[in-house]
Length: 269
Image (cartoon, rainbow, N blue to C red; front, side, top):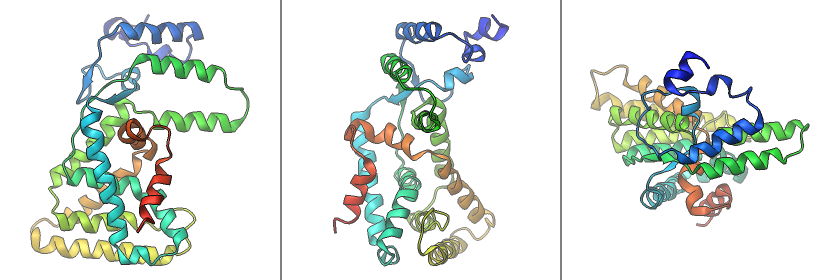
């Protein structure tokens, strides 16, 4: 056992080399640990600790608030004439590619804070056992497993999200700043399969120009504010949308496809 393992109990350095029965033993032994409530990194935030699966501490309180923000996100898209005039295919592409960062801007704007705690270890054990039944070989299965790992609500993913939110709160944006920033994030010409990418790029520039014009009278001495806002907004793209779904909406919608619900909401009016 290494010095790190002796002093912190961390076993992540040898995790990949453990035998399956050892992995199951470690998962089972976690059921005897007290549930931890995370609002920031634990004192010894080693790699294996940061990969622990977490869930909302109070989903009954947080999920309805998040759902309300999601409804406002779709209504914001519906309210933009320039968005509604796009071909339906492009509306769907932008919805799929941009709903998550626009939603996260909504969380920041409304100051939605939340806490997480350890997810039940039984769900981790079930995942290990189910993965052991999957046939080996196809590259698609490996890709699917990697995508599932990225979507899993881990302590590391939660802290990345909280870091983004705190950066926006420190900027203290006005409602107009948030509105134009949401437009700049929504009209992303880099979203795949856009038919009107050039036109959408023009809409993004228009939103950014409007944002800059709002900033000038509000912060005449802060020349770098515009760049800081756009840089902070760019970090939202590093948040996996599936992680957002698992953390905020899976307790509400169960196995339903959130994107299908978003499409239904978008074209309901």
